[in-house]
Length: 127
Image (cartoon, rainbow, N blue to C red; front, side, top):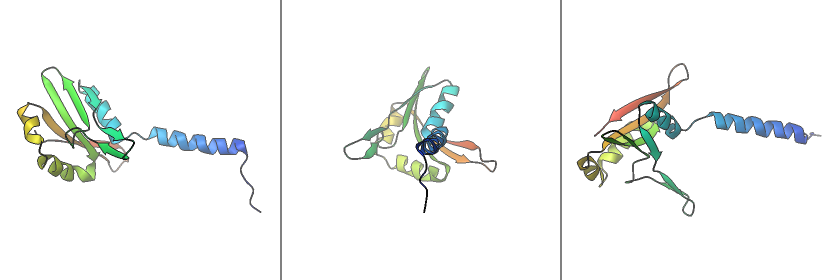
C-alpha cells in the first residue's frame, strides 16, 4: 500500500517547485535587465489577451520598446535558435518600413546557454 505524503511534506514539495520556477528568468526579463544596464528605459509592449489566450506584440513583432536620450529601440526577444526566423518575420512585416522611417532602431535579442550552462545574448541590429 502506497503512503500519501503528509501535508508538511507536500508543502515542502510545492515550495521547492515554486522556488525552482521563480529562479528561472524569461528571455524578456533577461533583455529588460540587459537594456537597463545599457542605459535604456525599457517597457514591455507585448500583451496577453485572456479571452483568446494569445499574446499580441506591438506592430506584430515588438516585445520591448526602450528609450534613452535621442534614441528609441524596438526589440524582439527570442531564444538563440529562432533569431533568423524572427528577423524574417520583422522584414516581412507591413510596419517595419514605417518604424524605420520614424528613426526607431530595431534589434533581435536571442538568448541561449553556452557550454558552461550560462545564458548568453546574441544581438542582431536590423535597423
